[in-house]
Length: 258
Length: 161
Image (tube, rainbow over all chains, first blue to last red; front, side, top):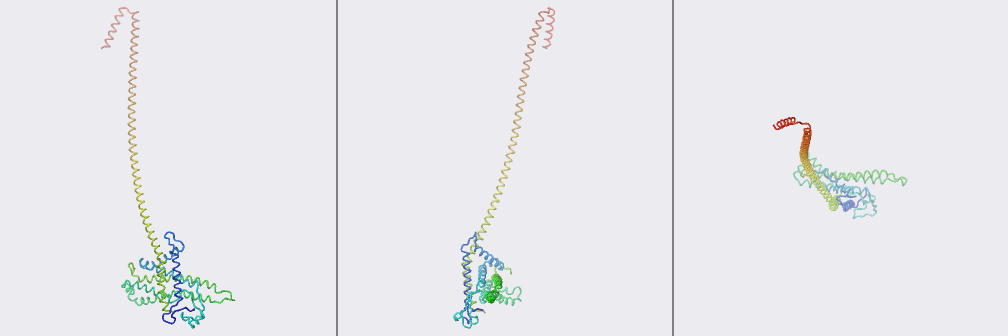
């Protein structure tokens, strides 16, 4: 595993700079693409990128409507659902398109690249990577969703309290466990899929060339690349729909079924 | 490896990015979609309204056409009846006229025939008288003359009586 440039390494508040930088980069990519798409919006004759962005918005709206109890709730979650979908899609794909690693010989202590860290990573320092291949980041998103769902649920405190006891009071332990496992699996699922994809890709890339020039790993790499692309897309969707479901489950607006 | 710093900073980073993307990317799109939705809705309701109007107008036109047709039929029928009546009247008048002319002709013929007959009778009686006078002058004796006078008187008397 390569080392990451990290602020405050060794303290309780270590910050992975590569992940944060990649998050910002992902956000910029999404922002630029969406700006390009909405640059010349035409109500009557949608063209090019506008069609794509409209299709994505429609897809996100369908997803939100399926998961949310009312049209009003679906409408309130739609911006987040769409941004999350596109953001995660771009984030997952960035690591597939490229990973950049630097071999650093000289330790850089203020970035947390101390001699023993470099030695453990054989001097490799990751500079370009999927932000979603970082457990702290995906768990951050999951906890954010969890907090949002409870914030939304607490708008109606009575229903919010009651939903822990539904359908019978006996399920209270289960619902409490669920409150822990839901965000945990929500975040870890995304991290696991993306991280595993990148890790295996690193392993395949590390297969030595036979006779110094026959790339035996190439077919394997292509297959894994396609599979990872598929997984990246699916996981972006899965994270988004689960987010809608978790928030939808705690939306006690009028028109709620239970 | 879980890092609290990365965890917290990534939440904050994501929220900032989300706000930026939402504000500069999503909202123009949502505005346009809403605008389109409203536009389509108004178009549909307007189309429905104008269709209803068109249907009402069409019904009105149909009604008017039907009325006009009825009116035309009625007019035609009354005109026909009047024409029939007139024709009958004309024929009757013509027949009466023909009858009158025929009658007049017949009277004229009758009169002329009577005139001709009386003329002929006049002539015949004249000739008879002449012939009788001739015959009497040559053959009649006073006695026969007397007898004939008596005979004539008797006849005249019969005629008179």
